[in-house]
Image 1 (cartoon, rainbow, N blue to C red):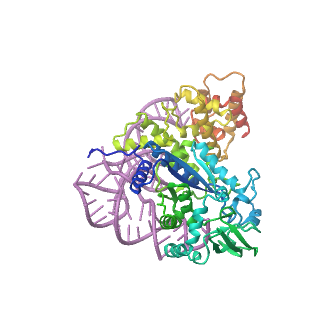
Image 2: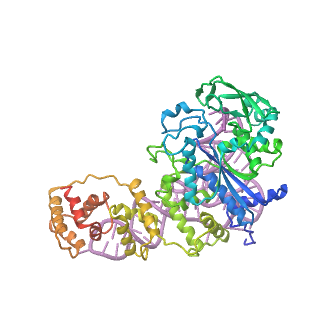
Image 3: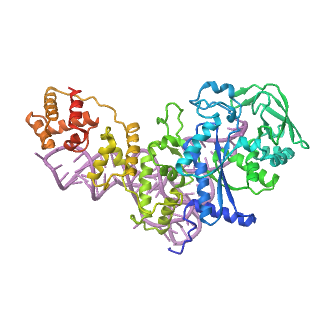
Length: 529
RNA sequence: GGGUUCGUAGCUCAGCCAGGUAGAGUACCGGACUUUUAAUCCGGCUGUCCGGGGUCCGAAUCCCCGCGAACCCGCCA
């Protein structure tokens, strides 16, 4: 054993991937003064937290490349010229009249952005901003309007027969043997997909199309019958995905792009188009699994069941999202809000390893853990450890203290000597854990059964709590009044926890009542009498 | 029809992608402490790492075959 294992970069899968990329580029002999990476951002629906994964991971590769001494940048390409194919769950039916139109030309149903597409991509970009991901934003609309892909479109259209045949052969899709691989936006009705290209006039770089009925999914879209000519260098229209990536890779000189397994076939075709039609070696790829929502969890009532980064950040720090996405690329399947406490804890563990508080025997694994910590901090880790507070403990405390929460929980943390003094960071953690406790760990109210003796005892307690003077030893007092009335102290304590915390158990009752406030507890009890 | 992932403690899962003593949380059981519940601390938790084969000094981890489950593609982007 112990033979020297060469550590690549920081020892993570990201470094390994970046290294493969560099080796490949060297073999190809391409210029390496700028290694550009790309991430495609969907703009057709509300972005799931998994949608961030594509960009976040591409950014990780960019960091790794820079760490190796190369210049790199991330292009975030928004697919906002794509047509709306179906109304996402939870969005108004009124969008129906816009089906088939590019998402950038559909009004924002939420009324806060210039268009539907901009609304959706803004949510995603906002998520990236909150994580600290830097990118160069490129809109599909601008790309086509400014003719950035015109040369690639021209080559693709002049090779359409060859491409159509190859697509059929590779993935069994027959349509491009008859239709040209270019979707104009119908000049009359503004729809994609219904406008079918039937002739390319190469000398003029113009395409002839007819707007006819089309089937999208199970829905039938009516064409308007318009017969038109579109200029591929400036009129609106786009390449289908089967060839568009290749055109982008070539035009923007992209050397890396990750992809989800759902578009595996498209990537396969695009790799071929890039190499054989555009004569541009395809970028290095990595394939990842889709994130799925866990079944039956309430995530958002109004927006269907989409777990957005915004929802996540209500309970967890941005670093937990980065950790989720950087810890590995394979295997991740179901993800939900209830993963946050674990990830909060895992981040703390990584920090302890990074700062040497926790020793890890296996050298390779220690290196990898430290590397992961560095990537989660975007290769700019803090100089000293942050105050450690156990997130689950915070949830427990937040369940107990709902009012004046930050002050009371902080006080408890100082008492437990979990922290030395209040700090904005700890306050933030209390807020996050508090949201979690309120939204997801909310105990259901229990019916408390009271007999005559317990009513009498509770009444007595209310009197004590209501008096101006603070009882000297409340814990003992409660114990005594139970005994005096012949009631089992055990039962009284349980009853009190049920009333105060809606739980069978809790922290030591005396101090707890004082922390919450005697009057307030007295009122709660009175409500049950 | 094509493809991918997953299968590890009663339960939920991590570990696998760079092979090196089988792990966590939770549930449950026991002990310590407490004037009582709780909290806390300590210990236990019975493992065919789905089955079979291969590579290796060494496999949960890598390769092949099989079984089971889930997902993606087979419209379109």
